[in-house]
Every structure is written in structure tokens, then in C-alpha cells.
Image 1: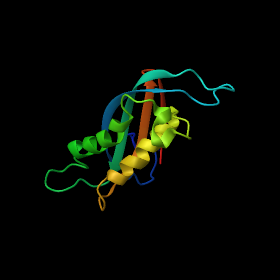
Image 2: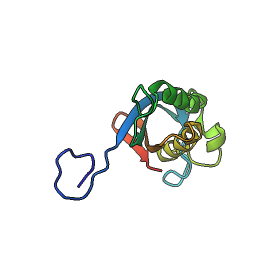
Image 3: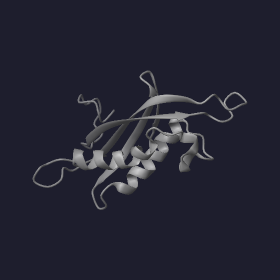
Image 4: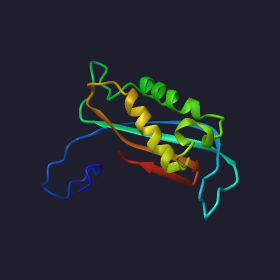
Length: 140
């Protein structure tokens, strides 16, 4: 049974889970190296990023999983240096290809460092869209 399905179809215990979802965007250029045997031409995208965190317990008297504002600020700190740059020249991608997959992993790893320690939340996924129809998701 999928735990996200509200209709129980088995007797297996289901662990309730909360998720918080935020999005951000940035605009950058990139050129994938070794794309069909060569480096593709430099081109830009209006990237969209979705972050999903999850946990079993709501925090404090406010009863939220994680403060939206705090999570958004942490995400902005990660994506701001990627905005309006050539990603191939940004430190994490000077050697690593700036593919949507690698962007999702990089954002996830950087964001994980900024999440509050001791909270019982975890990054469930980071999705990066290059276009409204094409995205890559990283599940740590």
C-alpha cells in the first residue's frame, strides 16, 4: 500500500507523514560537456526548483513541520549564487556537468547543511525543471 493513499488496502501499519513543499527559481546559462560527443552550445534556462521535506511530528505550539520562511531563506541562500551566471563557471560545476540531475543533487546537499539540526525532518526530494515540461528529481 502506498502510504500517501488515504484508502487502506492492506493490514500493514501506515506511518503518518507530513510534507512541506516550497519552490524557487533562478535563471542561468549552461552547456553540457560530452553531449552527443561534444560540448553543446551555451544556452539559458529559467530553472524552477521544488524542495520537499518530510517528518512525522509537528513542531512546537504553532504545529508546523518546518517554518516555510526559514526553509525558503535556506533555499534562496543556495540558489542565489546560481542566478544569472554561466553554471559551467560556478565552482561546483567547473568539472561536473551542470545537468538538471547534478543541479538537483547539489541543491539538496547544500540545503541539507542549512536545515536545523536536531529536528526530525528530512529532505525527501529536490526537483529541478529546465522547462515547464522537463525536470530531474534527486531523492537522497
